[in-house]
Amino acid sequence: MRIPIIAGNWKMNKNVDEALEFVNQLKNEVNETDVEVVLCCPFIALSEVKKAIEGTKVKLGAQNMHWEESGAYTGEISADMLLNIGVDYVIIGHSERRQYFNETDEIVNLKVKKAVAKGIKPILCIGETLEERESNQTFEVVKTQTVKALEGITEEDLKNIVIAYEPIWAIGTGKTASSQDANAVIANIREVVKELYNETVSEVVRIQYGGSVKSANATEIMNESDIDGALVGGASLEAKEFLGIVHF
Ligand code: PGA
Image 1 (cartoon, rainbow, N blue to C red):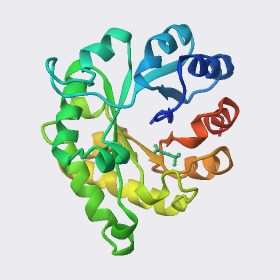
Image 2: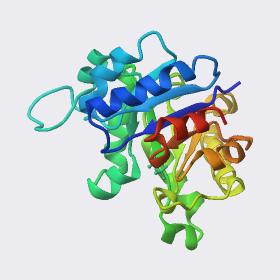
Image 3: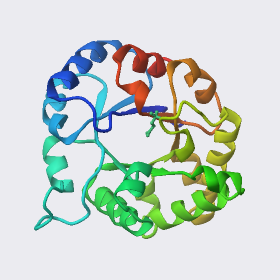
């Protein structure tokens, strides 16, 4: 049984006050749900949000971290710093990081390894560009990204990793992959995990879909057999809309 996981990725949105206002609107509305709810906040809001969600079912996520222990990396945040706040999850390899900050598969792999070594659960993002999709390279691209990101990751560690399949052309564009298409790619990622490890772990690992998920399409997406949750950008900024997804 894979527990569904809905994670909000606020990206570079919300100051501390806005983050707390959101949490206040959300926290008592998720007590009854069996869905795991994660808020991936900007670094500056993590501490305060951590305090605000105490005693609720909401989990805390960061949007990035560095792979080194500590040192002269101006502007970066380490795994230990996140742990000290009490972060549960960290998004790694989001396509915006890959695109705008030159994160390679190798860097993504270093970050995934560091996060699991520290006991922070990575939400590992993979996905193809429109060009790659149109030239029928989707399966190949997500396979390569999966294999490279998981290099050196043990079966035990894999159980703590959430994979987020996010076709880049569907992020923030209002275009979603059809739920069947998303399911097909996600089933394929599960196949890759099975080839890399074994069937048991491939049935355990949770794989989300991300890309213009909103309350209006969440049910259809979540009803697909292999989709275990959603990574939500735009629609996670407003509590009512995000709750609509959580209660799909
Ligand atoms: P979106 O973003 O829901 O705004 O498309 C998803 C994401 O980037 O994680």
